[in-house]
Length: 201
Image 1 (cartoon, one colour):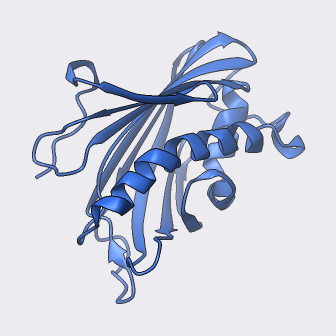
Image 2: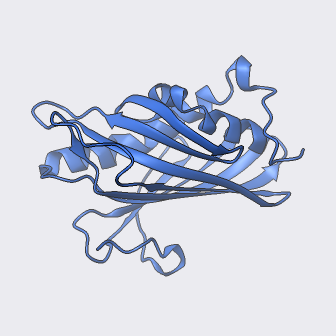
């Protein structure tokens, strides 16, 4: 069993800062893999960010090691389920997972995003290893209408056996690479005026 993230009670250790992106890690109960916490600012509106994140076809533009992502179901305007494949360096086997994502807007300055892997929605494939568990949370707080502060936390178990150098590679490069590219992608012209019906601006 893997415990859910208890963000407020987690003993985060600062690892690095690059391009204004701070990376922290923490040991977690019943898991050999450390939880990750990322903090950064991003120039975007909250509705613009939500619209970009909900377009899972764009994940190969910004998510580190993403091979493909496909929308499986749109449950509501603020709730989706998608399937993704993670590209691993040879000779490690690629991973895949199904994620259930919910967006909430509890007040005018806050956007919350919760993503958790779902089992049983798609059969496992013989040439891929299914991620056993992943749980991620975004807390997006408005500094101004066009600038957001993001706190992103994730805990995961990628399944199978991963050599230490792979884990270190993903920790060293993945977070900064991902959120640098998110900053670029969310501000592409087609998302500049994007809106979602659960965020009123």
